[in-house]
Image (spheres, rainbow, N blue to C red):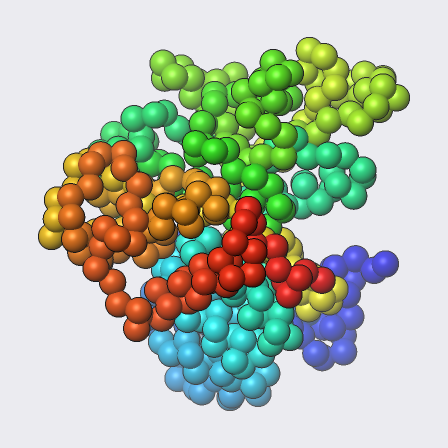
Length: 462
């Protein structure tokens, strides 16, 4: 089988490069933009951003050749003359014939849902970098994409896709997956962090903050555990793994201890069962740094199926737990948007996603950071009012959990206590809102098709 780069080079030689459209020119988008013009067989056809000036700034600061983009020509002329076009009209970009793959990088769940449905309508493959949208409605969006004959994919370089790759490696090699996940910086008090406290927790100085584009609410969504919950829900849904029953525990753990800590309690570890997801913290509960931390990486823990494989672990120097039965593989870093081109290539030359939502196993429910009062308006992910808690999908459905992706701009109908999970009954909402309607359609299908533990539709499977 030819490598991805070889196949891309063949497309370049044939004069048939992959045409890519990207929505959102923020940090993640900029990282991809910096690599796009360096990749044979790929063309960045267009950038859609509500601020065209920001898109131009992204091109300039990432070293994109000025001769390769144009702010004044149409999308169709851009394809004709091999120029990257800047537009504020994402819908027009998605509808443009000749563009092959759309990269959704907005981070806005409602907008991500709308773009995914437009890609289905206009037959464009989509890489859903927007994990908020994927967790909100990914199981249904993946089904609709399959029905439309397009590929709906996780983003290579982002942690969920890299974790899915490790899980696939383990299963393809014949191992059962005990646990899969990533590292981060987390302490229990971080759940209550707000945009006003986030920089103190991160330890950034005023000088550092003055020298970059730092969005306190976005950074706070990483710190308060919401992003970790979203990413682990995406992994659970993409790999058929089961979230912990009471959410992520964030145990402090270095790479050398992964197989010791992340094994079942019955075997001396901290997991309630095998086949789950978890996030390990790079700081101890008292604030000390964890030795050999995995803050920027991803991992999978496997189990030797028999004594022979256990002996092989020992013979080849694999770091295991004390019993020798459990071992881990990990990747210490991820390159975010710099690696995103792998998704584009895999979709177009292999016809395969780099990870994809296939079941509804995990959900992320808005949970009160403080006592909330009737009449208050929710301020969403990373804000002052709620954080996202990972839940099993069946528990979210049973309690009518309000997904974190919709916890923005909705007004509370009643008081909600600190640490209480919010429900649909707690807020005023309109079923005419597209994102609300899509989410409720997904919940309705889940109840109707299975009404039990998981939604694992044959329509989403290959």
